[in-house]
Length: 335
Image (cartoon, rainbow, N blue to C red; front, side, top):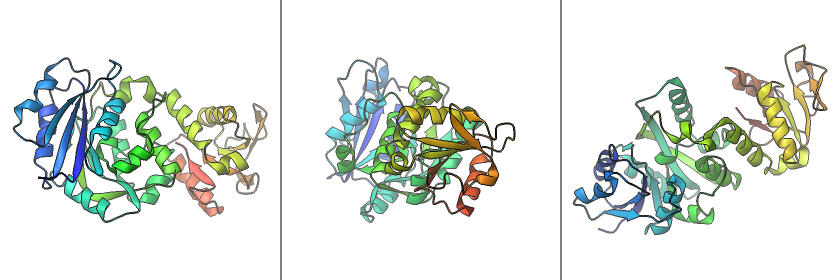
């Protein structure tokens, strides 16, 4: 059987969940695939688990990296080893739903304008409300336009739910060794180039939450690096460099974003703020205007929403749209 797509599954010490993850791949309604199990610095029983499956589609691939386990490095090796034009990402503690490959492959092969396809995600064993809110938010992004528009709020794609064209990953040179989250960085670089991502309506993945997941334990996912990443990629947008920005919100988030953008040589014209005690002040030499000047003052600047209170993003978005800003061009939500 000639494979039509490659599943790339990075593995590091996943003996408790790996067999179930592999089994979920073998239960797919689309059978023409290869499964590359990328064994990354494993010192538990993980390396022996693929051998227990009598299936020629499974390839156990020990990788020689730096000696430090890295999902991004393992995924890059898998990208290079894949023999097909399409790559489905999968993690060693997740469960692929039976129709995942078929539905994503169908949409991707019928949509030449799409770089990749994701789908709805179910959260397994949630460790609190924060991750569930994030999954609900991602699931609410239905179209390529939704995904592109929300790129600076949080990562708008859940990495192990993605099927992507291998040529796209090669063009982007895969995941890069950056100080922040490699997956979000990759998606930002692709979206910056105008690449589009679709989504199937079905649930494609059960995504396991745990207390020791990288998003909770690794410094690359910490608040400081998240904002460093956002400022870095915002500053790469030509309109920001040419026109500068006006920031909605003069609180801690807005001030942090302004400082980081100025380090990136982006001009910060001013802040919009509703707190009357701040209106008329200057923050680091940058003036603070009130809501009555919104949509008039600094109108040629790109507007950035940095209001972190609940419902703040929706309120600023409504105001910006009513003032004639076009989201994704001269207006971006950043939190």
